[in-house]
Length: 438
Image 1 (cartoon, rainbow, N blue to C red):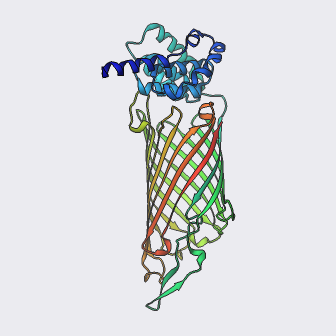
Image 2 (cartoon, helix red, strand yellow):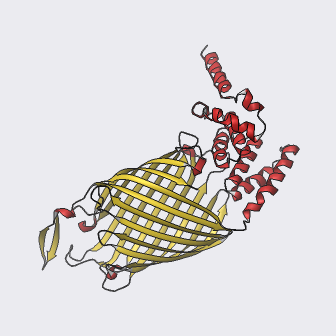
Image 3 (cartoon, helix red, strand yellow):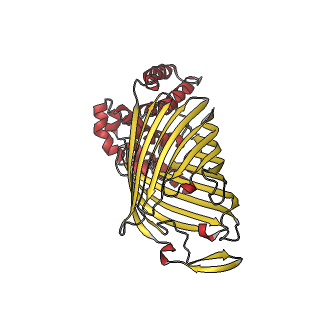
C-alpha cells in the first residue's frame, strides 16, 4: 500500500507539471508568449520535473529569451542528461545568450552521436551554420554590470586592535599605551560598483570603478579604479593591467602590471601557467613601494551538460601564486618579501533554477628577508599569514534571466596573524547586495 501511494503521488505530481493543453497546442512564438506566464508560475513545484523544464526552455527559445532558457534547460539536463533534443535546445540557448563557443562545441559533439535521428541531425547542422557566425563578430561585444551593497564590518578601518605596543629600547622592553583610535571600529557601510567588458576575437578589455563609505560617520571611505587588457588564444596569453586605490586614512597607491604564459584546454577544464610582473607605488609613503615578480598556476573547470558535480557546482577555479616583492628603496623595513597565495573560487546552483551560491576562500603567507625594526622584538623578521573567506547566496528578482536584477546575501571573514602584534588584525561582517548586468 505504501508503494502504491508513493507511485500515485509521483504520477499526480507529473500530471500537475505537464504543460496545459493550450500550452502544448501553441506552436507560434506569439501563441507561446500568451501561455508562458501561466506556465512559469509552476516553477516552485515543478523544478524537479525534467520534462516540464525542457518544454519551458524550448518555449523560451522560441521567443528569443535565451538567457532564461539556459537556466531551465540546464536544470532539466542535470536531472535527465540523455535527451538529445534537450541538449540541442540547450546549445541553441547558449548561442543566443552569447556563449557561442560552448554552444558550437556542444552541437559538434552531438553530431558525432551515432544514434542521432537523421531529421534531428539535419536540424542540428542547420543550427551549427546559423550560430557559427557570432564566433567571428564584426565588432566588439560589450557587457556591463552595476551593484549596490549595504553591509556591516567589525573592523571597518582594518586596524590591528591594539591598546598598547611593546617597544625594545636599549635592550629594555617599554610598554607604550595607544590611543583608543587604534582599536577596532565596527560600523555599517555602503558600497557601489560599476564594470564594463568588451570582447573581440582573442582580445578582451575591461574596466571597473568602486567606492565605499561609512553609512553614519563617513569613516572608512575608499575608492578604486582598475583596467585590464588581455590577448588569449588556445595555447598562450598575454595581459596588462593598471589600478589605483585611495582611502580616507591617507593610503594612496597605484599598480601597473604585465602577465603572460601558456594555456592548455582539457575537456571542460583549462590550465594556465605564467609569469606576473607588477609595479606598486605608494604616493603617501614611497619607501614602501616595490616591484613584485612571481609565477602563476591556475586551474579552471566549468560544468558540462550532463555532468553531475556535488552540490550543483557549475564553476571551480584554483589559483596558486608564488613570488617576491622587491623594495624600490633599500631602506624599506623588512627588505624583500617572499609571498605566496592560494585562492579557491566555487560557484553552484542553489535551491531554485536560477539561484546561485558562491564560496571564495584565500590563504596568504608573507616572510620578510631582514629584520623589520630594532624597536619591535629585537629586529625580528616579520611573518604574516592571512586567511579570508566569503560565502554568498543570490536569487533573481525579475524574470529577465541572468541579465535581470539579483539580490545577494553574504558573509565575510578575515583573520591575519603575525609574529609582530602590530600587524595582527581580524574582521567579519555580513552584507546585502543588489546587482544587475546587461
